[in-house]
Length: 73
Image 1 (cartoon, one colour):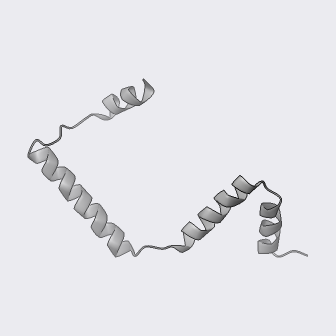
Image 2 (cartoon, rainbow, N blue to C red):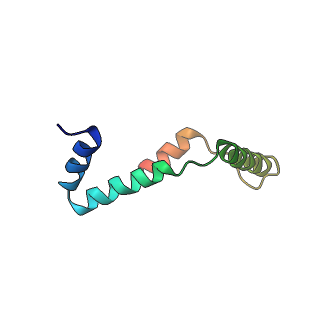
Image 3 (cartoon, rainbow, N blue to C red):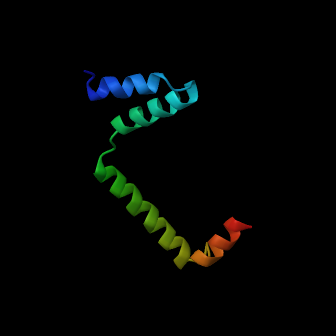
């Protein structure tokens, strides 16, 4: 009887090379765990920058409806 990992490996090996590459990429990426503190700090800095841009008029806000229209056209 196959273990779960052996079953998954056999299934993956039966796929074409692009499918196997995608699976390999996803598995490798799943092992790279950034520290949550680092990610939280980066999100905070980005939010701070965006707020400053809005407050000083560097950028103008765009509604979600406007974004959807633009993507669909």
